[in-house]
Amino acid sequence: MIKYEKIIFVCTGNTCRSPMAETIYKSLETNSDIKVMSRGLVVLFSEPSNPKADTVLKSHNLQLEGHISKGLKNSDIDENTLILTMTDKQKKSIIDNFENTDNVYTIKEFVGENGDVTDPYGGTLIDYEECYVELARLVKKTVYKLNEEETL
Image (cartoon, rainbow, N blue to C red; front, side):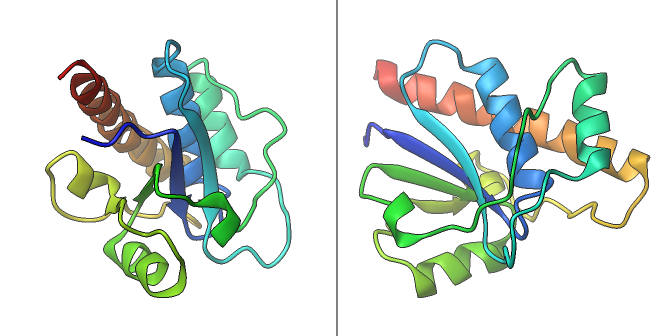
């Protein structure tokens, strides 16, 4: 089993789902030396995280401090990088357009589930909260799976 050195959560614009997943992961996994980051596939210019994502994270005592969106680059990825996307379409896009894509999964696929993480962009605060709840569950399962693999 691969010992990942880096995890990259990927969504479309890197302003909501992937930064929330990154923040949740960092709050759960404090003993690991794995580098954790988030990136977007369509980042035309740098922008801060979505205010609704910030509000939802704050309501769970988490913070996205100083987050600025960044696009995924080939230089972000090597053979020890785990890439977790929010959708199957994003996964396919990465496999088609980037190098070192042996370890690309949707976050649901990685933890043994099917489907995509719905983008709350343009939705209500409740939509963002529902996205957070889903991501928190999936990220927790990801941490458990990675910790299990380390102890095998």
